[in-house]
Image (cartoon, rainbow, N blue to C red):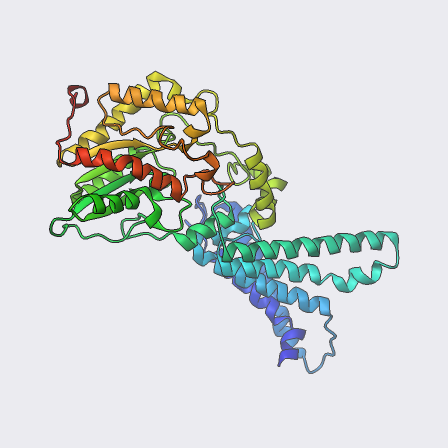
Length: 466
């Protein structure tokens, strides 16, 4: 039976069949054909279907003629069949991570995945395909100079693929955020982050709080989310509640409504969604890119962005980045060498006109949060002030202008983090988000301010009510 499967290339047909089915399940963003796919993607589906039908037909014909034929299957053909089977299974599994992955062939992403099982299978397929060349390359390596060159290239490819496999296994076992959307970063998020029914990185909460429990609501972006922290217990909100439980007689419950890459307008929507939980204290953990909706602050250039045409899809850098963990590791490390702490030219936080418009939206946030009688404050969080005088000056300017607008700002400037070097406050060398130490230091600096403010009424200035 095994001989029959090998001679008739059944595993090849199965692998191609899984890929064809995956291509059928995918739905294009631009649905021009049957309200399912774009015209270019239809060509992919038709090509995949044709290859699958031809392979299936060959397997069936071979099976019917097996008793009449005497075929010799080479080791290289066995390797190719196995590679196609592994690739088809890996590609199919990759779609269960996110349905859009079933269409990644359109982006020429053949071997990249943040799904652990798929990542291993796709790599195994690539390695098996390269090893299939040994039967031809190795004998020719001694026969001619060209053969020797081909053998050296083949050996190099095998060594690089072994390194690729090692990186994939390491990313599965010990993933880390890398300050960029790599597969390793995605695997970290997959392993260490989970979401409640509301879509936040938090546990489930009852709408009605029990007894004398006091609720602390933290709203924000990746800083409040605790990006880079393996445990939510290390976040600013949880650390602050732990200190309040010790210093006060009340029991504090933390609610977190935050997501990375969000801005002040989104935070207002988060606030509206969470007010039904009756928080006693509402803190906006402010990041210095929350103004992004007015003027772009966060850079978004890179090989995984801006695929506007065929040339973008065929970019060698993008192809290597989307297919190989090894290239991603090299890319993010080279990117880290050019990282600058100082803001780019044209920083909107230096433009008072833009800031004034931004403060109007922050005022809306505070007014909305204050209607229920909760204690409300904005806590600007920027550990870069310890390493950059320019950013420290920007921080102080922001605080002074916010106070002038009547906003309840609880400052946490460079003096709060002065005892710690900047490198001791970040997640790792590749990701500059605040680590657990930075969150603890911030909680230590804010807890006393919250204690003195909690029992008092939030004063809304006449300027804010206008």
